[in-house]
Amino acid sequence: MEFSRVLSSPMQRALRTAELSEVQPPAELTPLLGEFDYGEYEGITVVEIRRNRPDWDLWRDGCPGGETPQQVLERSRRLLEELDPDPDRNYAIFTHGHLLRALTVAYLGASLDLCRHLLVQVASISILSHEQELPAIESWDVT
Image (cartoon, rainbow, N blue to C red; front, side, top):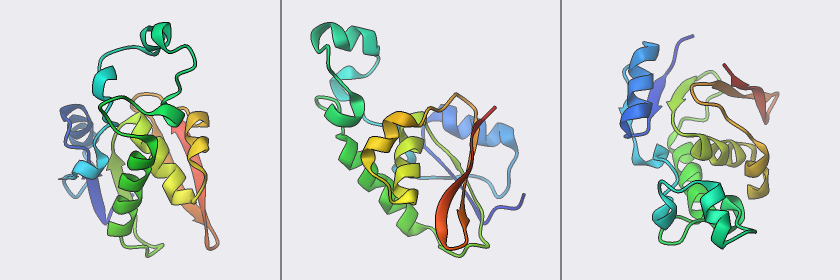
């Protein structure tokens, strides 16, 4: 597949995945694809968080000292606005699971609540496309 642009999170693991994939052109780094800012919850598991906040939900509550889900969604929308909407253009994007969920919701114009239902495995491939003029998920989380 040919890509008009290849974009990557500036984090090393995403950039290295882009390099190993050998897609062309070389990846452009953008902070818009950076991982969800987990603030005080960085490096803490959901199990550990829920010891103190049993009903905590990332997509509802966000992270103290970090980003809110709405901020991540807005960041995803800004990225989409930067891309040429020509349906004949293809983009390869290397990012992180939670950001990919928000990006997909932004692309579909769906509710932020959908993010909690989109599971993503490490190093999987998802394809966002369109059915006639409507945005659509062509394939999801293929490993």
